[in-house]
Length: 226
Image (cartoon, rainbow, N blue to C red; front, top):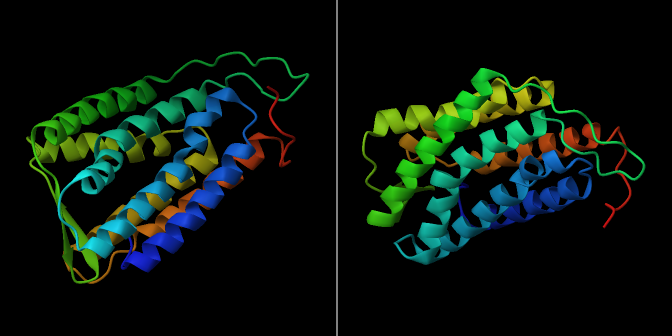
């Protein structure tokens, strides 16, 4: 979320560009889901730029925004961390597949939390109506979610917990950045002062690009083999 339609569009376009570069640098199949996260975040910002221009409301655009933010992210992130942590197959020519590593119990817990949270949120969107309302320099979204405190706990465990519990230092840093972003943006959003999530999404996208570049051995890499 950003503070205006223009800010959302500019941020979303830049994040999508970082997402393309991130995917182009992937050399392990297991890294693909997590590497696609910047593209997802960029698309999210661009969708919201259209919501700004039309003044909020309900409908397909609002629903698309909510699907990404609510059921998709708590499922996507822990699964992405899980796949990346299992090493996967190296996609560079001439490299042998790496062995699978043991999956820590806590990582499985974050995936389970993500699945349960995504199921509840998907049900809420399927049976209710999500609305968007411009409030000062922020947009507020409303949808009826049962057991909201429990769902929020599951959401943060799945998204932030999966990253913070990763054995990868850059992914833990990404988790810390997103946790800080959640706190700062939450406070600013509640005061209806300004929405700044797009700035943290941009930082997260740069970190993902660095993560993929490092996983590729410090090289941008040649095109992936067909």
